Length: 303
Length: 122
Image: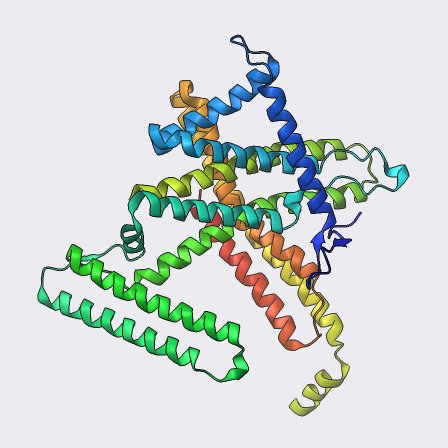
């Protein structure tokens, strides 16, 4: 059994290696299963629920109470849909790889967790990052969100503080602008795309610095420029550790399962290991993924 | 005498095997030290949860939920070390002294770094 999936799928001869066939097909399978489950759950809603409806209501109420207690009553309902979908998708992805392969005699390679491939958790974490910051901008306003990267800030009572802050910000804005324009006018060996991207990014940072100076004057507080890179790296660290937790648990669990099953000649132990690593760890990691997405949202929206 | 030793090192050492052994050693160091932090952090978390559940059995399901989330966060650095160990096992670089040093440095860094993160995140 292979740890790294093979057989890349190419689309129209695009200039990259292609998609992983196993991840692609199993993600489609999980999507189909989720749609079938959703249709079965709301097919005939009765006041006294049947078993399928009761199970779905249990999950739904659990996440609704969780989101309401974390985000408040009005916003909790909106984010509850996103968080519950994340949980269900990740849980089904973790479980689908542990279904036994009944068609091995036909040469079928069997099921594969989409979350074993790094791409799926990374894509989900990028989605969560986008949702967190866009909703923070929507709730707090763009200026407040931008200011939150420079917190904790200083009060600007004394003119010394104001002068130092103003000089620093003006110097940073001018310096970034000059760097960006030099980037744009750089030697042509860098390539147009790199030059435009780098120069544009630096000039954009200069514009942001000017905006931060304007906000500082409006609020009468000095931004903490030392904390800005630390806050940005902290957000990036959250966005990196979030998917790697899920990926490491599922991929590591699968490798341990394969190695241990091979060592004991597939006798006796593999079903128990499959239940532990597949169902228990899969459910716990899916729940932690959804809970942490919720926690990041509430942290960004609150202050 | 020093030149003889250096000469011996330059001619008789099989750098392929040194790099391979460095790779596996680094994987072992990373996972070995990484499991310390994860174990201590998760155990401490479970102990405190049991303590709180004994004090207030009514909210014990909420406590167990919080405990599981905290344990999963404390396990994260150990999982990073595990993924690093797997990646080291499948790496095939040019054999040499620098690569061996890089492997050992990566393993030590992740292993020792995971101690603090695991214990602290509990």
